[in-house]
Image (cartoon, rainbow, N blue to C red):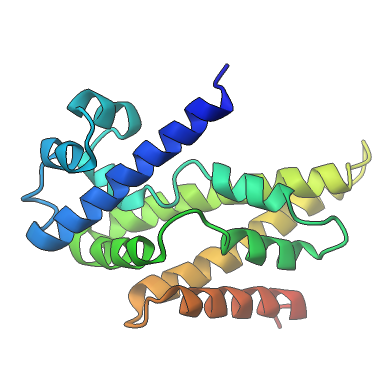
Length: 197
């Protein structure tokens, strides 16, 4: 069993590696940066680097990996808050440095083929939907033999699609500030709340 102190230390190590990678990637490009350089800049061994990331390219997607931060933030929201408000607040509670998130988004757009970004984002979107579906199922457990399970699944996937649609627009725009991401996400969720018509 992983103890909280180990989890916190692991998260600090991952964040140090993310920060070191962003600085290196911006200075010399992704291709010219090695895992060894990133590990040294973060003050860890190469073995520790590979314990946290399979490759240096994984660092370009580390801000979305795992989603434990989202699961924790969503669970902390009050049950009387709408699921759309809860998702927006939880999403904007990300534990990462705002500068690193914006710079990583820019690097992804510049350094990685669009198809690879889309494939990765689709997987993260599915994971995001699963977290929302779990939350909805906890709040309103579906009755056996009804369509409630399907309604929860569709609702979760629609919410995830709205959020990731906003992220895609944000990543492709010139304005990549986190307030702009928050604005786009809120607009996407409001569109969903009004109904698509």
